[in-house]
Image 1: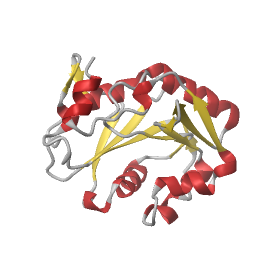
Image 2 (image 1 turned 30 degrees about the vertical axis):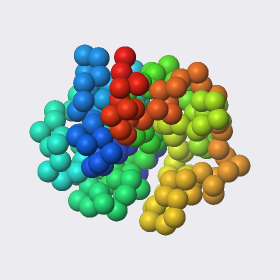
Image 3 (image 1 turned 180 degrees about the vertical axis):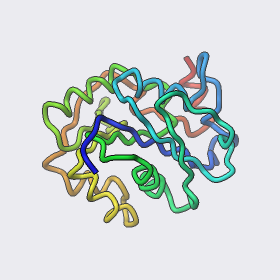
Length: 195
C-alpha cells in the first residue's frame, strides 16, 4: 500500500447501552449525531471515512454521505479497538494521517479538524487535541504508528497504548473546542450538548 490523503476510521458499533436507545441516529440540528460528526471531519479536510457498524444494528439501512463507506465489525463485543482494526482493514491504502474519531462527537468543530491536520503536516507522528486538561478526538496517527496498532489493540489500554509507546512523537494541540472532548453516552450528555 502507498501513502494517501487523510482518512478517518469512525467506530460506530457500540450498543448505546448507557443511552438506552440508538444514540448515533438521534437528531442533531438538521442532521443526526453521527452525520454531524462526519460533517466536521469532511469540512475540516478529511475526504474519506470508514464507519464501522455492528451487524444488524440500528444503522444497517443507513445511507452514508459521499466519501463515507461502511464496514461491519462481526464481533463488536471485543471492544472499540476491534472496530478500529476492522476500519483500517477496509481502507484501500495507508492514509497519511489516519484519524480515529468516535462517532458520537456531534459538537466537534471542523476548524478543530483543520487545525489538527495543519499541526500534523508540520510535525508528523501523532497529534491529539487537548481542551483544558483533557485529551480529545480525533487522534491523528502517522503511517509509522498505524503499523503498531494491531500489536497493541488486543491488550490492555488499546489505542492508549500506542500513545504511550509513541510518547516522544505525540503532539498535544490546545483547542478551544469542548466538542472535541464531549461525547454522547447518556441522555444527560445529549441534553447538555444539544445545539
